[in-house]
Image (cartoon, rainbow, N blue to C red; front, side, top):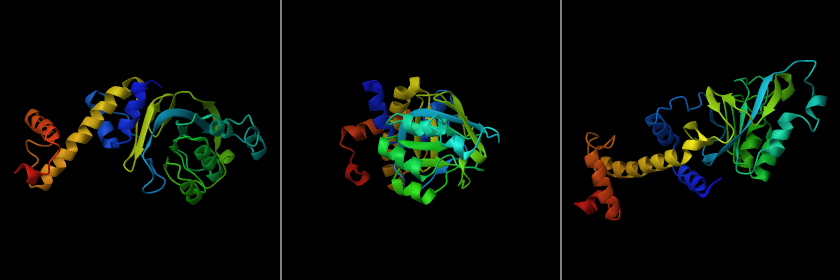
Length: 244
């Protein structure tokens, strides 16, 4: 990852998914927010990182068993050991919560290896224990049954669909309390700068609204209010009463 991309990730750690989604929408990208995926635990840390993908298809009785699952060649188990440190493991479970996309032992191993987090449009088992690892995780809903009952892993680090969104390996994934948004890798610097600028402006607008100013002419930003914002930054970001 280039120094510019690393700096972009740092900016993304300071902004919300809503700012990111707005920046993507302004550039014509609408289908970037995962549907029905929520944080596993309230208050978990912000999730930012490049996608490493795993794709499941429906299991079949002659191919899927606990014996087969236990082999080192199993792609689900390989994903846990091969997802790069700093990456986000994104699991295409074709929306199924009929079996687990991950359990607590896998989460603990990912946390130990430095993986940034996990997202699935399916669900997890052992969710209390997963939350205790501190690994940021997102899911559609809890899924207690063992993986091989319903899920068969077929591909690592290939394009997938997750919760209605296309995810290509290396795309930048951002998750917070509102959900998950996916940024095409080639746009990450541009989107991060735009989202961070919007985040900065919102701090100014929030102060103004708190002082009684109406939305009109303030939010969304206008050329005039943007000029005010830059003057506010240059003045050291004073509180409204200090300006008066």
